[in-house]
Length: 159
Image (cartoon, rainbow, N blue to C red; front, side, top):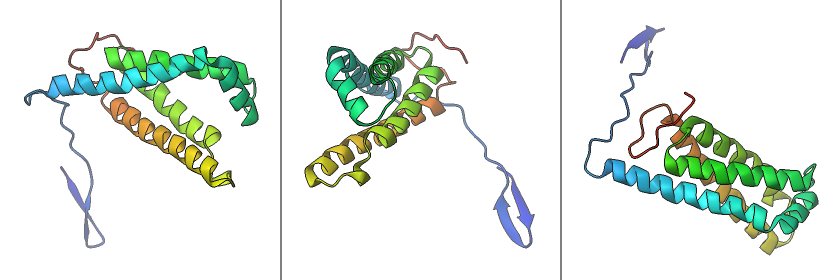
């Protein structure tokens, strides 16, 4: 790691990074388990977009989304395909990046708890907002390591 001295202050000039390693006991297996839990949960949520399409489209319309039915189908596809890809270790950069983007956007557009007056509705929307935010955090963490070799992964990728 290098340092630079500017106006009498020592400042960090560059960061050294180490390659991602899974050489500690059970690290690869725990990473796989985390991917399966995260990915399968999101894939299940995506399937719900299809099995409850009319209700979700009505909610999307209520929230002011353009083309609500298409939006529900598209978001269901992102969740289902992205979740399965993360679990399998396929296209990790694309899958994790798509999930992170979707979860952040949907947190703000669909779960705007700050605009609710009813305390119960506000709490429900805040819970959904926070679930999307921590899901986006997990997806961003996976995105950060998406360009490295994942243990127990199918190994398909664009990058």
